[in-house]
Amino acid sequence: MIDKKIAKLKDVTTRQDQKHWINKELVGIIQYRQARKWYVSLIIMVIFMSVLMLMLFYIGQGKDLMPEWKEILLVLLGGFIASFSKVVDFWFNNQENDNKLLEHADD
Image (cartoon, rainbow, N blue to C red; front, side, top):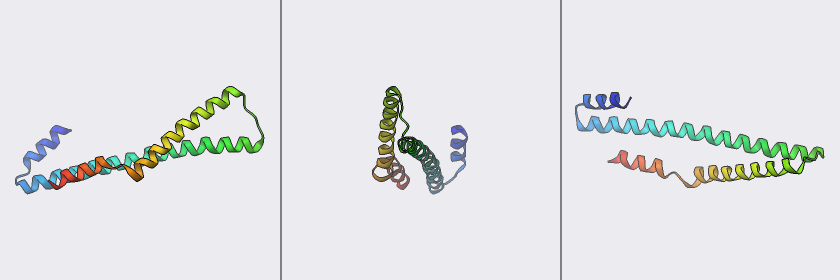
């Protein structure tokens, strides 16, 4: 796949055309990564909310779990809270890689 892209780059004649082609490829990479980020974020949110809602449902029903299962559920919930905080941190604080790609597109 990369060989095809390099061959296509060699076919482009002027330097300006090469820059334009490279910028189009960088935009394609950013779009691909953004789509995958949405999927991962959505999956983490759905799992986190499912575990939380099931725990609240069973607490509301007054059902009690064995202590071993309670510990496992609390560990799972703690792990998903960490994942949830990473998702929030990513979407609101950390987009360095995309900024680097955009900086290189300006060159």
